[in-house]
Image (tube, rainbow, N blue to C red; front, top):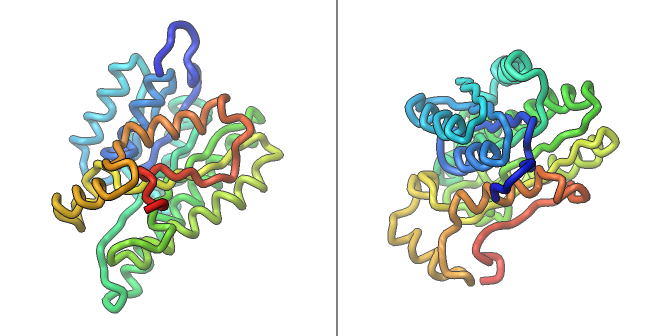
Length: 256
């Protein structure tokens, strides 16, 4: 929520990986609306990434676009370097970049395994490590938000490796929360359920999406802006005593 006077993220800098669309886009715009300057990490759609950058600028905030595969350590390192050169610090990291190729268990190859784990888990691990070192160096604390998934329940259609990567990400969240707490760095995860983005439409028909949403306890799909609101809360001082937790936002799907 935008308020008169000081905003929650005035003077802060946030890196959002996988920010060219969907949940990453919504989080970038939300944090900008609350005063943060934004680094938009994107990979394969410059036009969409530029649209996100324009939305950030429309909030009166500075923005840097960075093309790179954060699953590659050299590119993740460049992401941090570019951010430091542009802004001199990092306050918030949102590990949102992820892939979910629908592959039946019997068809998964080693190449498939490596690509999914590299993007969804390795990228988040080393981005967190690199950013946390900068946060520790400055001594002012910080926040890391990992975007997990309802797939941690194991219910991921043709997504055995995807589910594994997201389960591991929740474990990483807890471990980092413990290790980084002495440095005043909080680490939390968000596990969205069926969300109104392109991702579920890569494996489900509109009818299947509608049926799943309607059959959830709250009866509708999650909007990316709602995930962004939760991310902003967790990264704000309002959540100063929350760390190491996975927060579910899924229309009550676990209750069904």
